[in-house]
Image (tube, rainbow, N blue to C red; front, side, top):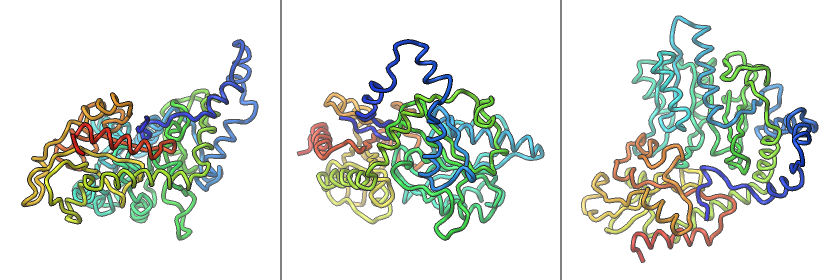
Length: 427
């Protein structure tokens, strides 16, 4: 039973059918003629147009650049902007604003740029009580760096966090930032939200010009193959980004022969993903709600406890969620299994005992259930995302992530609940 869809989605049956019918070559010459030498059916150009349509934009406004992954896409945009800025403005460093809970590809990239003295990095941390980054947190981070919003040259913030599922109101934040500095380059990683939430890069709700200049996408998050991603960037910014991989392809923006094979499979996965999307979203939300209903006496929101919206009045075993129905993309349950024994004067969170998240992941695996500790790049280490939320180490080390997908069922939710009850001894 696969409950790790934020890491990668499983390929649908139509992939196997496609591979059998279209790509079984008897010799290398057939393979070369069909896959390498030429894109006979315009597969890549058609795919790029599909992407643009899903984002409500045209190729007159934005350019699609096929990459190997969102990791490459993020590095291309962050490094590319900084390198070109330093060449154009050698008198000062660019000020790059980034969320502290971004994917590690972005975090490590900007940290390296900072260490090398190529950029001034400003990290924005979520609100400790709500878990959300708003313009208030952005203002505080910028002010603590001795800057104003108009001093920021680039911002990179993800729309939905890959570990917690917490949603950031990117449009609202970027609108304020663009108002302060219209020349600011605004990038968002939409890996977890693309294909689940609508995206409109063309204009804002009131008809004003869009505030997002570039996005990163990875297609293995929506039933495509591992090894294919994309950058979609506003045409006016192309000249302000230095290529990460040099070459003739993509107008010189990203060298390397694009894989027709991977693109075609990505297109197939994307079509499967968007088919009956509203119904699929409702299905996944129902799975989330069912888990909370089955475990209604155990599920609590860490942040709602912190704000006082809810109170724990009985000692016992609880599933502490880092995120809740109000502020997450509801396919994600990042939680710890905690025994709370002293509630007389409120919960002393640093003293709460938790089952190590790594033990829960192993236990569930022995029961045929696949979940993860968090982001796959974190391994068995403490979640850097939960650490950025300033969640106590004991809770953070207990963290593990369940992420539902379109193919999961109610029976999966019951099986998960039963397995967790068995490890905790709960009835």
